[in-house]
Image (cartoon, rainbow over all chains, first blue to last red; front, side, top):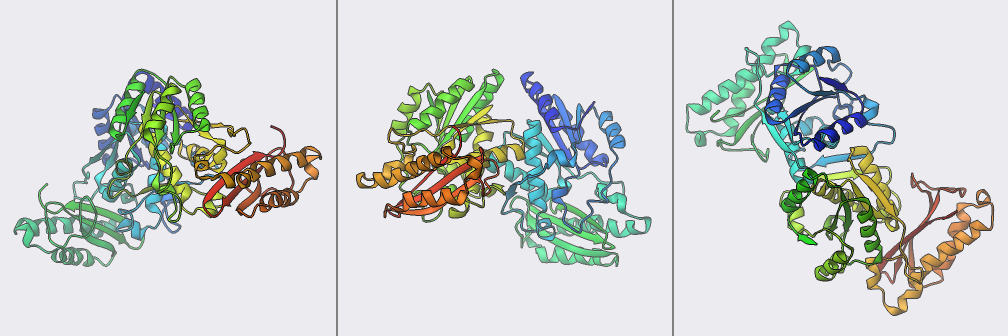
Length: 286
Length: 286
């Protein structure tokens, strides 16, 4: 595996791949790899001749009071893990190489970005789409893999790719969970022992909601019933502050009122006002 | 020459070019070709194996009270002219193919877009950068050619390409003028006979300004002197309403106070409140 840190170098690498007619799979990440990331790398491996993993803690997708400065980072550890998955290139650019002085372009998607995380984290998705557009142009992948844990991010990227005609196939990878059910996230590293039970309430509430739906004819269930059920499970933990609990259409991300096979339960919860966790699940079927 | 109207088809064409290792030169236009456009096509021809000319009157770069509906259009005429220049592909998509229902992504550049035409035409440059990003992704050119008449547009595209890492070389082509000196523009077709003298005042004022500078040590000339000189030449014509007369740095587009070799005179003038013409020139040297 080769470590590349300069945008100019990665352009040359991908140019050579193209000249050799090799397909490229990109996995954009912010590092501190866990099994979720490694699954994305394996999925990329299956879909392309060469796998590029980008590791960049993208400052412009963090709000002023968010965890940019404390975001976990260990390039050596992550290099080892990526190499273990047969990744060809780990692209880990410096902040100033990605956003030099006088940088001033933005890619933004409307329609999917104002609700959910977009409403709690203003500007977040502009930061995501801008950096992803840059990564797409630098690595010119044939496919790019994103985790479904950040479901809204995946939907926004798909819309950007469709709207702006990027010649790239976007693949989503199902959420990877700990044995306990906790959705894997680099931010789980912030959790202290005593906070685990509260953190698990997201998954437990999803399980309860799915059970509730599975026992009924889905069309008879109101989103309001689901939200109230989930609310009660999470609110039981005084460490939890609910950011949002929503039931939305899995394509438009607009609120559902009746449950259908396209209804997605999406959650964002802050643990002890320090750690913001998200999770989601389709309510009916697998 | 092949006429392509579907975004899916143009993607296939460019994919085949890439597989054959052919370089592509793109000339983005809004059609109604004149010698200016044809020069861009010839420049593209010199720089690439295959030349793609796009012809698309991009609705999102027009303001609500602008000339979108009257913009001249004749695909047959333009096809003939492009074919005469050895263009390989004329890409002329429908509006709905470029902006399908639920379209909602924007590429925007800050810092160069608030002044000059950006201030007279709010949203204009977002429309330009969005459609050009789409055209870049659809045709994946190695080089793209833009005329220097739309100087600010060229500067904005260069910034977008640098900021977002498009692997594309942007080339500017000098302004092509009628024998009279009038900068060629599709909008000149709106001019009536009696308006030609007023339209020519832009070029004449540029000539006077350059003469004024050439007779002096440039550093001794104030931008204010130039602007007042130009103002007088243009204002002499009662058909002319000045939108802006500015002397700016040719890279940053920020106001200059003293004239240097990087000082650019930029003009926008409305003729009889119907026809908006622009022109520009470096003040010192060629």
